[in-house]
Amino acid sequence: MGEAEKKERKPVILSGIQPTGIFTLGNYIGAIRNWEKLQEEANCIYMIADLHSLTVRQDPAALRQKILECFALLMALGIDPEKSLMFIQSQVHTHAELSWVLSCYTQFGELSRMTQFKDKSARHADNVNAGLFTYPVLMAADILIYQPDLVPVGGDQKQHVEIARDIALRFNGIYGNVFRIPEPYIPQVGARVKSLADPTKKMSKSDENPNGTILVLDPPETIVKKFKRAVTDSEMEVVYREGKDGINNLMTIYSSVTGLTFDQIAHDFDGKGYGDFKTAVGEAVAEHLRPVREKFAQLIQDKAYLQKCYTEGAEKALAYSSRTLEKVYKKVGFVPLPKK
Ligand code: ATP
Ligand code: LTN
Image (cartoon, rainbow, N blue to C red; front, side, top):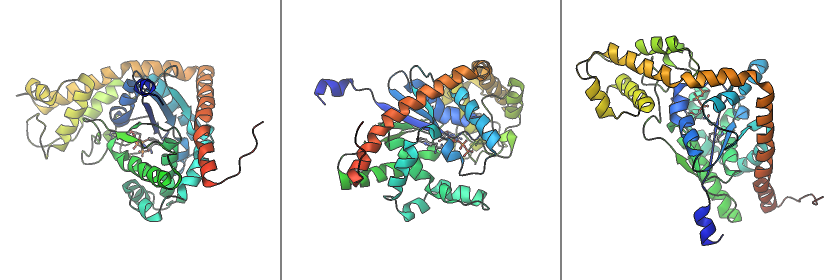
């Protein structure tokens, strides 16, 4: 690559989300909001990671519905198929193929250290399947096959991006420069949005307690009601401080949707009670998400348009990812079929 070309090359960004349910405010603030912004300055690739969602038992009809809803929801959240490459992971067979190869370059010990594996195997003790264990290898394949520079994720996925880097470095160490080494891209504010019902836990799509989680499609009344019930503390001060998990979380959310700094928020609510603050946060979030609800309702009706978008996305993703897979197969010593 020449100097001029190097300067002009836009960074490549890649990320994914599991279609395990309607996205939460945590998914939005921690990840998808960055995905949307990055579209303007980078070549972005975003996938619905449905292969990953099988690590937990799913009902087939419900999964099919959720995959389409999540695809439409990404679009409603501002991911534009004209600007970014968007696709459904299981429609692009190269990911699973690279995953197999990479699994032979990943150690049992390093997978055993993944905190998400430890958490999820404790939560689903009746189904500790091999996929749950090898999940970071599939995620590494998702990433490395597109040679991205950055992977925008919430704080909980940092460890998985790091293992993808380790696998890539190991593979490159044996075979030369096959993979670009990606960096995680984690927001400064909102990397780990907490549950409203238990602010020591992360807000999660699969939480059994609906009061802890704001879904981006929740109606405005529900959003305000859930914020009014949010767990705080016994003090009376809206200020960001160690030990005030509930208030810190609400301030993070409020700052993310209004753009106000923590100091401005503390100043605006000085001398006011938590009740006023919780209502203000609820109303700001409900208003912020209004266009998302409206756009989603429109998109989910238009099955033909959705189908066109995911079909084109899968075709492009296959062409793009096949280049890396072919290179890997060649490097490890497989025999290629002659070109037609
Ligand atoms: P599940 O409950 O099914 O495990 P999840 O809500 O944790 O799902 P994922 O599909 O695992 O969501 O994550 C999608 C993206 O959202 C990832 O980049 C993840 O880091 C980010 N994310 C998830 N939860 C939060 C949160 N509470 N705060 C910030 N980012 C989050
Ligand atoms: N494991 C991620 C989803 C995911 C992903 C990826 C994120 C699958 N493949 C590739 C970034 C890059 C999750 O559960 N949040």
